[in-house]
Image 1 (tube, rainbow, N blue to C red):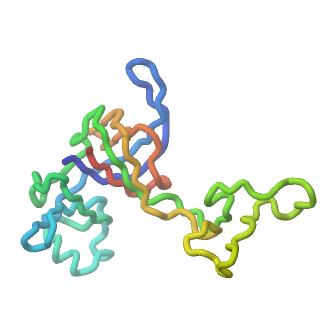
Image 2: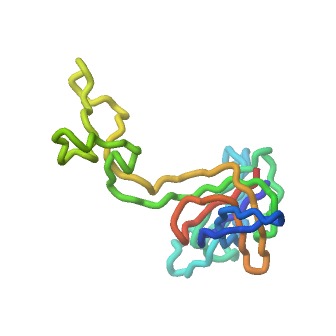
Image 3: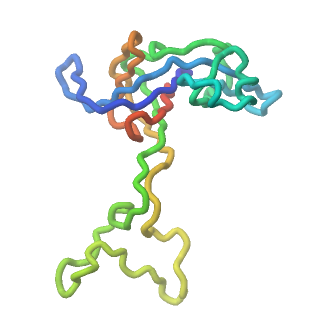
Length: 204
């Protein structure tokens, strides 16, 4: 199983050898360090814990420093669970961007952009009210939220509220190019989050 952590940088155009222009996202991927291995007997599941990004020791709690020992201090710790239940890495091993190759199918997960409190038109794509016949101030209103005979608002009704800052997973992406010298991955399509968002790239 291939996996790595990185940060989103920017979107760009990538030209294939056939001359086709493809929308792409540039990621700074790795290097990551394997900091711990979870096993079924002790932890109840199989996973590899990895650390990404350097952090000042004074900004890390003592428990984490003691657990990582001489591996260093990291900004981000994540776990990856292999699909086949077997781990092919060791503690202290470094994983870089060249673990992937051009053409590899991948799945990318990240936290989407936070948009705060938004109305129903932006949050759910409501069309709003009519623009004529006296509807002067209700163009973007949700409209009636009642239910006949129930005398209450049903649970799960789409309404205005907090939007964004959710973990979003995008499947079906492809690695377009790999730059192991600069730790760069070029991934087809759009990736959730703003610039600098930590993303998880997992091979299918």
